[in-house]
Amino acid sequence: MDVLEFKANLEDNIFYLHQSLRNKTYQHSYYSAFNVYDPKLRKIHKATVVDRVLHHAIYQIIYSIFDKNFIYDSYSCRMEKGTHRAVERLEKFTRKLSRNNKRNVFVLKCDIKKFFDSINQEILLEIIRIKIQDENVLWLIEKIIKSFPSGLPLGNVTSQIFANIYLNELDQFIKHQLKEKYYLRYCDDFIILSESEEQLKNLIPQISLFLQEKLQLTLHPNKISIRKYHQGIDFLGYVILPYYRTLRTKTKKRMISKLLLKHKMYREDLVSEESFEQSLQSYLGVLRHCAGWKIERLIRQKASDKL
Image (cartoon, rainbow, N blue to C red; front, side, top):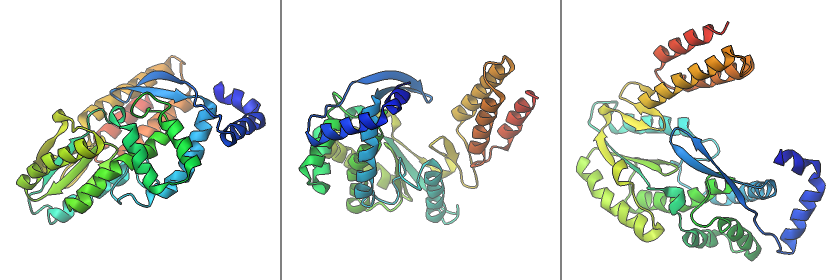
């Protein structure tokens, strides 16, 4: 409804936004909060339509300025990247380092504790000022960053690029100072591969110190792990093994549970056949990227019951 209302007076609303930016009278409005489960609880903060229009305009401009300076192996919220590209790249790393599964490979997997909540707004602005000197642009970016009490809100499209700008500092440190060749990151989850378990153990305090001193971030103590590649790498919903990849067990259970619920709603005429079909194809699409034929057979069996 809020989008329809904005669109009903689109020209007036756009001109008003334009004028408030020219006069520097623009003030970011309130956020409305709601929870989502994906699968863990996340609190999303939704900005008003006029602010979201501005967020997208800013995103389109600053994305091209910053993205070209990001490392190749940063995969979150970037064009021609994403989860499947990240998993494919990880598999390529494992094959290369293990000499096609003939050598042992160790995997360091880390996660940053409460990442979006912990981003320091002043440090973020300092990093942005290195690339952008225009005072008007900086004024506007600061308005958006400081529209939230602390950290960055999950829900703003600008938060995606700001998060990548922030963690690009970590990427550059690991790639160019620690000189780790087999490193990749998706949002605040990152992985480093090595033939030496001891080397990976030595990296942890160095990375932890950098995050604390440079970015005021902390590694999640319960999400630091080193394991052998042949035990399986749990990453972005998949488990990567030497000769195939499969879905994470929790992902399998959640997928089947959601399909059964959607199927029940379809049988009770609470959702349309089109809606059910969209969900079905979405799940099958996920399975095409892994060895998921057993689950696909189960899902197709459940889907056939709707006919």
